[in-house]
View 1 (cartoon, rainbow, N blue to C red):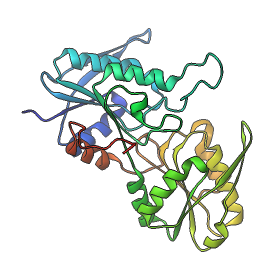
View 2 (spheres, rainbow, N blue to C red; view 1 turned 135 degrees about the vertical axis):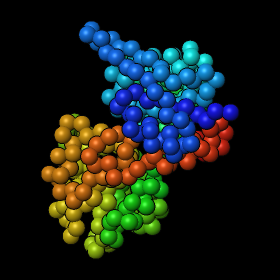
View 3 (tube, one colour; view 1 turned 180 degrees about the horizontal axis):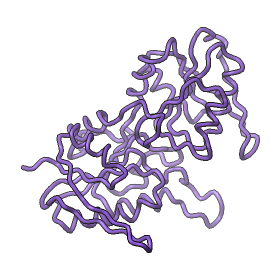
Length: 305
């Protein structure tokens, strides 16, 4: 019986090579080409007949990836793969989870439908679940959410002196609690009041009890970073130690990284679900262990369990 086969589009080739090794899989080879009119082609150069194939694609900036990903999955299936799965360290289109204005597309459901038709199963890291409580609410294939809280907590314990973990708003409480447990640290949740599209006010009740601690702001995603910037600025002006900002996924839209530095962050750290200079926490071992232990997905728990 052949070991699983891993393919990736060029942007994820390095990550996929390390993941293939961690998961006990073979790294497949392919060639891609973009034509002058912007159309693209994919050609497999590794035989995948009767193989269990995993396609690695972190879905940051997904619009330019969706069609090449579809073409690759289709090529693998036509080449005789026994099963085609998606390993998406970052899973896009989870925020638009309701029709906020009349006539809007609920893109979380649309994208889930697209991926469910394209793949047999998927695995991701800490998707942004809010009104959609579990991936199975929108995905019709087995969809597994792994959690980086232990890896983040271990990094904090090893690299931050006397940490107090702080969630920048009520939605982040689940991340703060899990990460603080792994870091063996106390935790707090900030109060957020939005004054407008670009104005957020944050306070941290109970902070005065932790004057000798290093505040560590944690969240699942830093996108525009407005909430974390406000929290970092609040802490920088009222605490003896500058805050450390940590997130699973670092999107850093609209200059968010520089904004956090300006707000007083002593360090900004993310996992490597999305490539960025802030990547300091490696989630390849987490994915590799899961793929080794649960290639059938029977043993890997879903987000809701």
